[in-house]
Image (tube, rainbow, N blue to C red; front, side, top):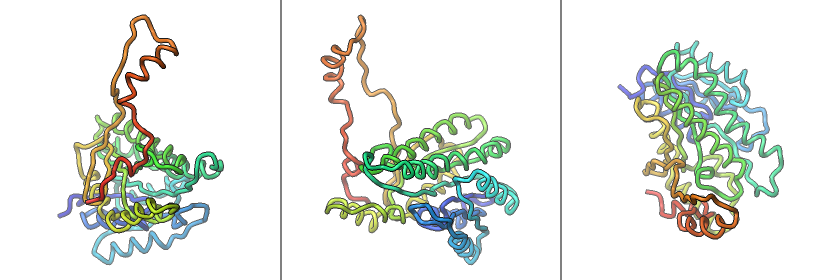
Length: 303
């Protein structure tokens, strides 16, 4: 018997990459799975295709599991409502939402077009809001529910050329934190994962130099989507882990820090801009974070 036996799980972006591996593993662990995927391109902007989600659902069924497919967009609130109702009607319940669906529109911030900002925020941040808002009352009513949302080291650490993605993913981390805080008394849990894994989204990252080529190659060879899925399914099953930020990187799992005071300074007579510049900033300088990207923090090869 799997750790999700008797549970119903909705997986968005479930036709490829992390979403597909989460759907397959959830079913293997006993869950009934609604596989949602718009079937569109990773860059967005097309109408999508119902086929990819159905292919994954049939794969689960062929392995003896229970699954259905849905091709609504997480950016469409009426569509999200339909997918939630489909899960409840088809499988008579809903216990967890795994939401890795996403797109990329990478560009330097000073060259970013409004449409690229809006689209990435709409899919990642509004999409997370939509699926959570459409299910939160159901979870609270039944006093059982788990959200596994996806942030990114692009947000919590930083990567050049991903201002839109980083802003959206930091927003998802904040959203998850509040859902977790408000859900404690109702047994509604919410956690986020910052995944390192080869996916269609990662494949769109521009390779401009040897360092970025090596980074992408490491992800392709050593950081698989199925490894991230192990953590996602565990978070669906766990009853006592909530409000946390994790990173999954190959066979490594990291519990990430969340913003807390690092060091403080007090001046009894009060600060002025001059004294802040001359005294506070120099004293705090050694504790300040540099502007290095994700690979300056995770500088070793994945295990």
